[in-house]
Image (cartoon, rainbow, N blue to C red; front, side, top):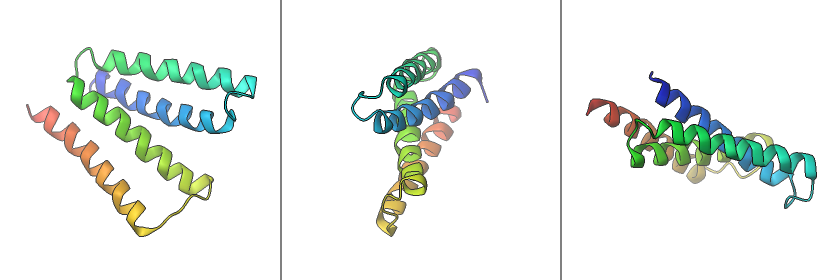
Length: 109
């Protein structure tokens, strides 16, 4: 795995982190959580920018948002008792399949 892909995965993980931070900052009313959230947000963008130096724009952005969306939804189900119905899980699997497909086809070119 290249450095760009590593940066992209870390950027996606940071996106999950700042999404949770937004939830727990309660509209930025909790100063410490808000500051950490903004720092993780900035780190996510920096890592994404580094990945985009070599990865195609569409691939990098779609994978970054896919990791963030799927990861946040999965962790919401596990830790926040969000709905776990079959259709939600199938939709998440489609997101994951799309992310894997984008990585696979980006490398084959």
